[in-house]
Length: 194
Image (cartoon, rainbow, N blue to C red; front, side):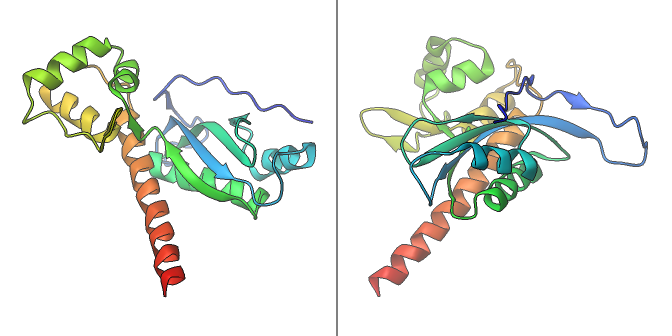
């Protein structure tokens, strides 16, 4: 069995020494969640297939039965390219799996604060001080959830906040991916209702 563990610092630029004509790449950190189609958990053969498919830059997490999360540190020319390629590699290794979520996308103030390296209280003060300007939560139940790309964009526009290179791009890519996942689910639901 191969154990896949990755060390990655967010947004680390990578220069290609072999050719000056190639596009610059960056390391992007994101997590892809899949529902397994064949069993409740991955076995050694599945892990080997993931490694051979190119997922050697991911840490595999097993939590919920029938689901797996892969935390990637992927070098690519864009965050969306990194997410799409990683997803395609997982699905080629585990063809019965279904992509259910890409992260980071939604989160509470604590999640956003951790990414920006400020306190939750700092973000809460901003939210209260700018109630019509601060992005509205995506989910307003007992726990408020925001689209991280919207909050990070708002913070970037305000200035004074240091975002890791590639962080905003990654949250936009995972938002795009999750929107596509939801479209597929909606189509499936509409077809079933007919």
